Structures are given as C-alpha cells and as structure tokens.
Length: 193
Image (tube, rainbow, N blue to C red):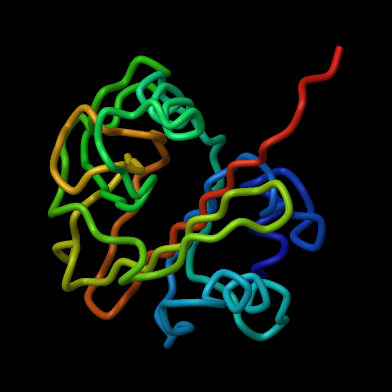
C-alpha cells in the first residue's frame, strides 16, 4: 500500500502537508512499539509521523468539538471559580455508538472500558498556544475486535457530566497486538473577522 497516496485520498491533503497542530484529533492505529508515555511523548510521536519508513496501519482526523460543559469548566478554572479542585482535562475514553457531534453532549453514547488517565498512557502539555493531549490505548484497555467510533476527553475519572471534548469518527477496530494513538490538539487563538 502506498501510505502517502492513501492518506491523501482519505484525508484530502498531501501527507507532508498534514497539520497535526491545529484544532483536530489525529487517530491512528499501529502494530509496532511506540514511544513510552510521559514527558516528551507527543514530540516523539510527531517525529515518528515525519519518518518515511514508520507509518500507521490506519489514520483518521476529525475536528475537535469542545462541549459546553468543557468550556464552562475551563472558564471556571481560569477564574478560580470552580467549586472543586480540578486537575483539568486528564482522562480519555472510547465508545462504540457515536452519534452526532454537538456542543451539548454530556457523555459518550456507549462507553467502552474505563476512562484512562492520560498521564499514565501518554502526555498532557502546552506547546505555544496549543493544549496537546496524547494517549496510547492497547488491547489491555480495549477489547480486541471492538468497533470504536467515538471518544471523549474528561475532567473526572467517573462523573458523566465532566466531558470536555467529544468526537465521532469512522469505525475503527483494534485487533490483538495493535495500539490506537489519540493526539488531540486545542489551539487557543483569537477569532478573525
């Protein structure tokens, strides 16, 4: 398979011009060893994307949808008006019955597995004006052959009304020995007229 041609056909832009820094989720499937979670994980993953010999088995991108709940909690953290001590966006979870993306979403439609702590399976960082979240989920966290098509970022490990961002994507199946990498980017910028 010509990965770059397939990428351009599916995503609509040449691979070398792909933007993994904007307001998108980059979802990819790999069957090789990946960088270790922790400080520098996101930079190491982005470096892998530029290598010609290392390519994922599958890749998708979708726009990041910040929920009303997520925007409200972010504002409260910024103004120290949150009624509880929050660590910010710290968890990711996948689901199997994604419907439509909307800012009013309050939880995944049908969650699969448990929410995973991003600090344990990836990294949270800020690069320039972009909040970046990177996470690797494997077949110990997702049942093999499960068809996934939704994911969310959360402020809490279990409270359903703590969803920060929500996306729906084309069906994505994780097979035994494979890993799914989520790279989420939230660019903070001023609007333009």
